[in-house]
Image (cartoon, rainbow, N blue to C red; front, side, top):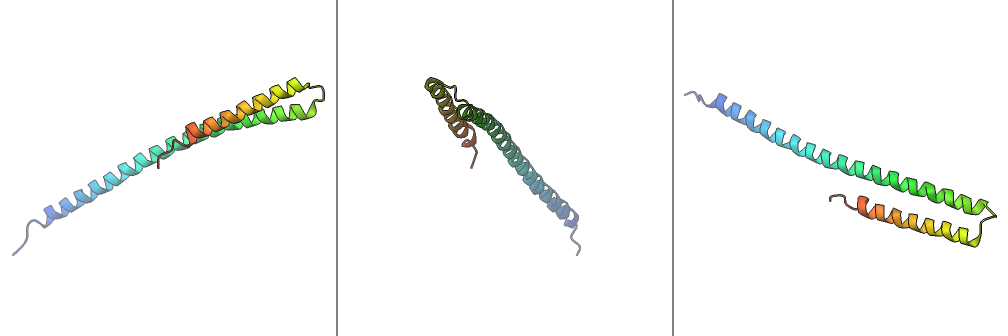
Length: 101
């Protein structure tokens, strides 16, 4: 006795395998999209932090190399450096700590 359902069963198994593969691909694409968003956010945050660090460096060089600065000038420079450090902390907390688990 011959089973005529074998081609139908093979087709069913092939479709099922295709659906499982398609679901896996869709899940991988969703994860990739999330990972790209995290990468872009990190890149933007690091670019912003880099700019702040460059400004801090310029201020430190200015303070160290200029004997004509008054104590008030140096206090202003230090105040700006302190604000930049706060800005770095803020960017790090706001952008880099919002990554999904």
